[in-house]
Image (cartoon, rainbow, N blue to C red; front, side):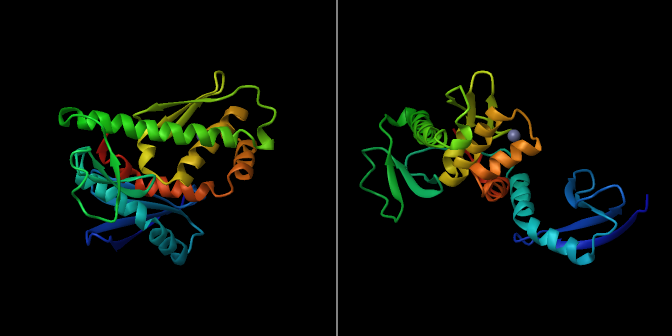
Length: 243
Ligand SMILES: [Zn+2]
């Protein structure tokens, strides 16, 4: 195994400077980047044949992910409470959460979402409302998705359940047809929610990540890579609020 290391500096958009240690090896076939907690630097592994240009392109392409990672790291686990007057993105569009009483204030371009409750239960009512909106949207989309000719042979009619999951955005039980979605997807664009649904529905046919699975997924959802990228680079924004 031939190894060599080069040090390189990167500057993220927050003007934080981090070292990237580049390691070339004959053992890997792709470029990967991970953060080394102990030494507080990034470690990039690349195949021997990767050129300097390939590596620089990879680092530039990874910038949104790096920024998101660093933001998450600096923010820690601080969560924003859903309270009256808060501005947030629902389906990636700006909204203000308000009670009926406060509805007349806050002149802004954002749409407002009225939460019916007393102030003591605002966060709880807002969370329930957001989850209901996601469930309604996803259930309707699922019905549309199930019309695809590729899924005609499926015997089960899938059902959606929401979970306040931060480890994964979707999962499914092929035996029961139950599809679990993370409630935090309410803050994502609808196209991204669709992609998570397509992924899980494709698992009802192929219970693994085989070649057949990816083939089915690309025919159902040709843009799935874009959604995956979006989710990766916006994770910490989605998990910012306590639901
Ligand atoms: Zn999968």
